[in-house]
Image (spheres, rainbow, N blue to C red):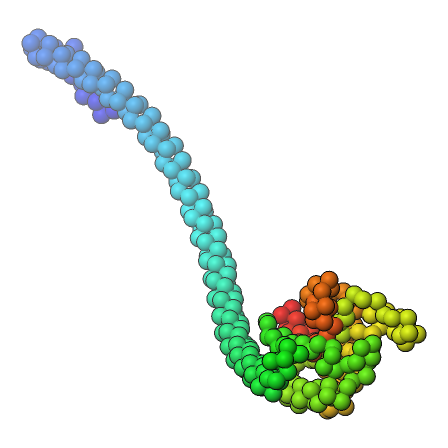
Amino acid sequence: MRNFIIPAILILVLIVGGCVKRSTYEQKSSEAAQLLTDLTKLKALHTALLEKFTTLQDANAGLNADLARAGNDIKRLESVLSMRSAETGQAMAEMREEIDRLMLANRELEQQLDTEKIARLARIAQMQSTYNELVDKMESEIKRGEITISELEGRLTVNMVDRILFASGSAEIKPEGLAVLKRVADIVSNIEEKDIQVEGHTDNVNISERLQDKFASNWELSAARAATVVRFLRDAGIPGERLSAVGFGPFKPVASNKTVEGRAQNRRIQIVLVPQKRAIVKELNETK
């Protein structure tokens, strides 16, 4: 700006010194005034530019600070994402391992089910074979209504009316009853995977006075008859651990006790082939 002031002073000196004409003086004076005006505008412009520059510097400083914070945030985010990615990868790996374990367990279970299915079919076939053999060997007794044979849900039952085995009020097996039981024992002894439960049943007619010293009630009579049959089956070669005897007395009738025919049906011995308790316990333990 000082460069503008020096020419203006020289012009004024020349004018004052009378070295130029008046018209020249006026021209130069006008030019000097214009120069002063331009100088004033330039100063104002310079001041405005300085203010704007300062503002821009401040804005730039703010932007730099924002950029620095943004950079730090990006680094933190990248670190978090990296950690999350590692955690996600670990979780996915563990999930894949669990899926593989479950698939292996499922295959093993399917194999066990297939094995059990085959074994069950074999047991059913054996039971059916035993049923058919009993029906064949007991054909005459079945026709006379002395024996019935049934199979339901893995339980095979040989139902014998008492007159084929025992005399009235007695727990001793008759000779003809021994022959019948021998045939039954020969067949059921071949089924090794079944326990044999012998059940004694009576009608509801009270024990006569002459027998009460030996059997206090029908309950004792039914239990004694069941025990006698169990001893016979054991002596026939069936292991004692597979045998059990139970007396139900008159409490599980299959017919009405109001008729002679009904009471005759209720006086019976039932030989029941049931799933072995050891096998049931083993199966329960395996499912836990």
